[in-house]
Image 1 (spheres, rainbow, N blue to C red):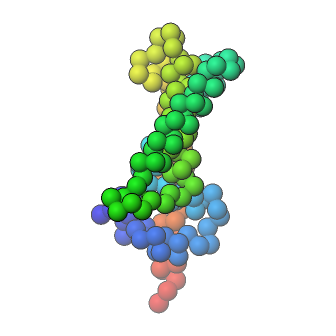
Image 2 (tube, rainbow, N blue to C red):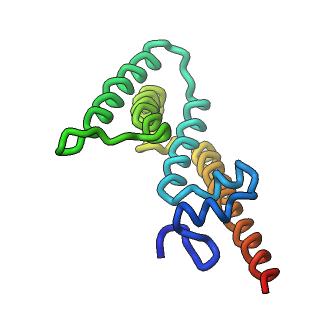
Image 3 (cartoon, rainbow, N blue to C red):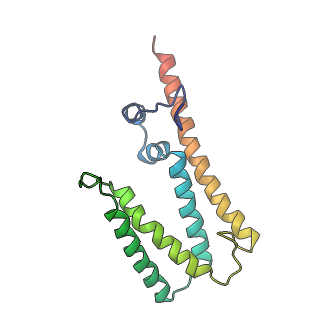
Length: 161
């Protein structure tokens, strides 16, 4: 079965729209997040936790990260050309990610340089637990939204003859 699909959770985008139509907007947004997107959001949560902890107001860090983001973002967008010469159209989400990911990577590397990090992990265990806990809360919110949908769908199916 596809990712995030089950007997009660529809897979097609049309079915998802039908089943989530009456849901509040944040719940609908959480329901639609795939595992790959959940992982991307967890990367952003980890970045924010560590960037807040190790923030440096030096404008050169942020200017360099912005420059790297611009160069890589534009090159990613330019590479989206089909063999027949037509361009692949991106929605706003992928377009933002094309520039945000290089910015986060460059600024993260500059902020934690010389601080004893191993890969993305802080030398202070409490900081790692804090970031992992925030990711866990987010994942629980996503699965909670799916559980709410399952309950809504199950109740609706019981009422029908």
